[in-house]
Amino acid sequence: MSKRSHKNLSREELLSLFQTYNENKDPKVKEVLVDSYMNLVHSLARRFANRGEPLDDLVQVASMGLLKAIDRFDSGRNVQFTTYAVPTIVGELRRYFRDRSSTIRLPRGLRERSHTLNMAIQNFSQEYGRSPNIAEIAAAVGITEEEVIEGLEGAEATNVASLDTTTDDGDLSLLDIIGGEDKTMRLLDERLSLAGAMSSLDSREQNLLYLRFIEGLSQTEIADRLEISQMHVSRLLRRTLKLLRQDLTSKETYSS
Amino acid sequence: MVEEPEEIIHISVPTDERMTSVVRLATTAVASRTGLNLDQADDINTALDELFRFSVSQESKPVPSIFRIQYNIHADCLEVVTEGVGDSINDETSKVGRYCRFILEKMMDEVTQKPNPDGGLDVHIIKRISRGQ
Image (cartoon, rainbow over all chains, first blue to last red; front, side, top):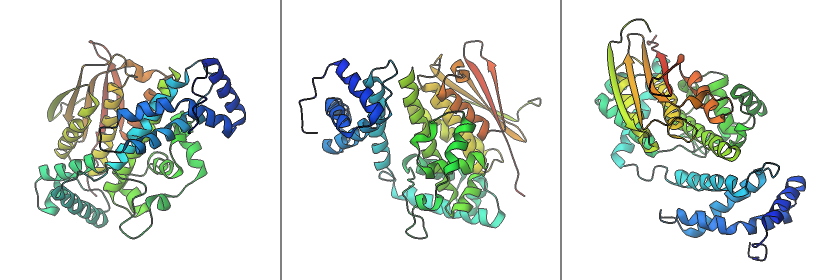
C-alpha cells in the first residue's frame, strides 16, 4: 500500500487492469488496483471521522470495502468502478459503526427492564407454548403496557444483536449454533428470485432466513430450536434483513 | 375487508429513514391494542419497516413527501394501509422492489395493492389474530 507510482493510471489503463483481474485474479494486479484507489478510501473514511473512531481504523474498514468492490466489480459492464465502489465502501463503514454501537448507549434502567421482559417472554412461551401479547407481558411483569412497549422497542433500537454474541448458556456463539447448510443459499435465492442476493450473507445468516422463510417457523419456534430468546431472534432477523437490503441496494445502484 | 373496523388510527411521518423508529413504536403500540402476540406484531413491524425503507429509498418512484399509515383494527385482524408507495415496487427489474414484496408476502397473511388517486399505490397488508390455545 505504500507505493504511490500507480496512482496516475489512465482510465483505459485501469479498465485494462480490471479486465485482467477479472480473468486471472492475479494478486499483483489487485495490489495495483488497490493502490490506485486509496485516495478514494481516505476520502470516504474522512467523511466518518467525526464520530469518535480513529481515522486509521476507518481507513482499514474502508479498505476492506475497496477489496470487496474490486473482487465483485465486473469490468464488462459499461459502468465506472467508482460508481460501484463508493456505495460498497460506505456500506462497510456504516456496518462498522452499526456493529460498534451495539448496547453502548443503552441506559441501565432500560437494559434491566429489557432483561426482565426477556425472561417473562421466555417463561410465558415455555408455559403456554406460544408467544405472549403485550398485555400478557405487562400482567406477568407487573408494569404498564406502555412500559412494555418502551422496553421492547427502546432496547431493540439501541441493541443490535450480533451473530457473534455468546448465548446465555456458555461460550458458543450463535454462529456456532445456527450452523450452515449449503442448500440454504440456493433455496432462498430460488424463492427470492434474486440470483446472488444472498452472497453477502454468511451461511449462518442464510440459515436464519431459511428457518423463517423456507421452513416457515415463527420467531418463538426458531428461539426454541436455537435455544435463545425470541427477542434475540427478532434482533438477529432484523439485522440479517438489513444486511440483505443493504447489499441489494448497493447492487441496484451499481446496475442502474 | 367487508366489515367496518372497530377502531381506526392514522399516523403521518416525513419520508425520512430516521422516522423508522417512530413507525415501529407506533405499530407496536397499535398491535398492543389488538390480540396480536409478539411474533405477529414483529412480523407487521418487519413488513412495515421494509415498506417504509423502500418508500424512502431511491428505488421508490414516485417518492411521497409524507408517509401515511392507517391502522384498521378489526375483531379478527389488523389491517394496515400505507398510501402512495412507489409503483416501482412492482418493477420486476428492481431487486429491491422484489425483495420488499417477498418480505411483505412472507410476513403478512394478505397483501393487496390499489392505485392511489394522487400517485403511487396504496398497499394493504393484513395480519390475522391467532388467539392463545
